[in-house]
Image (cartoon, rainbow, N blue to C red; front, side, top):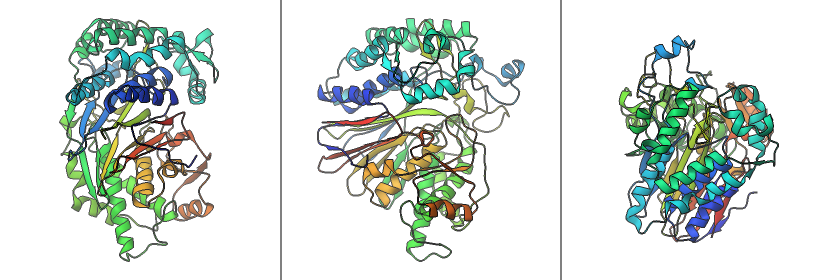
Length: 543
């Protein structure tokens, strides 16, 4: 669908239609954008459990009309106090953190603390809806069941042998011992009970209450090194977002441990390449236009430079070699842009990073906007499911390295490298645009595709999200590092990219490997536009 839905009173976009509707219901009852996103995020934990859950992490951007910049929330967890390189090596993992199992479950889950921090920030906006109401639809779907999506079925089937071997996974996600079919009803009663407990006892119970004690006991029994003390020490933090000023306005993203700096860097390099072309720069085989060789090549080459910078910078912010904002200085972006050959591809690959995630956004009637991203990393995270609570624990610790160097080096109580990065643009013409996507290495690239198509080239919002996409690097646990291109591109684009030296592989027309993007645009007069990705199961819900 290429038609862009519009509304005036409020809008929610998520990758699952039931979550979008749960958020819209909150807006209809007088709730604000933050409350709508919490309701939607909780619902996604029940209806999209292969992508997100209470056992994952999250990042937020929250903007109020008239504010010069949004507020950022880092709701990512640290490694446990007992987590060391020696511990993993003693268990036979000498080179990398395992992707599955109890020793993949080595970082605290921060997503619930992000909900709490966001709701606390929104208290100044007026009377709050009860937490029980925000979690009501999530609990209902978990208790009474949800229809299994095609993506859920495909990912369980593809990873069945590995996932079924993990503690607690089969009991929760393999009813009758088999992979549930697409459309089958999946019930998650333990998760429903956990959501009800949170509604009654408050979100802090997840870290310092009965739920925390139950989770710590289950983690210990499964063989994870995380403890009740690790949970109790966790807090989400308010952070100043990174920003990049472009001719079209100012774009914001999250600082490390998020890879948001790479997303902004790509846009900064692309802007310089395009402006050089507009002023008669040499060596360009064709002028910049959306979805041409020049457009795709420029973003891909910008991505390579941004990723090389990112891989030495992003990880625990307390151990970064320099402040992330320095990477966005004009002179540094100028130098990276000068390094791009608009006729030839830089040799690749570089070490890739995978992951599964959900992006969701909302804008309420007062113009308050939220961009939120939440994840358990790979499909079903570590695969470890805690039986007392029904929580699937993330494997975000895979973002650590065991070499002992750099900001992503594994050590006790550190934050790993995060692919998660929600974006928001405050445009010069008064529009506000929260946007984002899931998809590991693809997140910065898809953000660049949506932003350049809609904001730079003026494509309608839904077309900018639905149009064919590209992906350099890995996503969804796939180790491929070729440049993948959806089949709907004009054949001349693939031919031009191959001629420039890109190892192109054409994939399906609406390949889910490209991620599930979404965006909302609020115009100065109050009209809202929204777009959901046809590659996912979501929708724009508005009134």
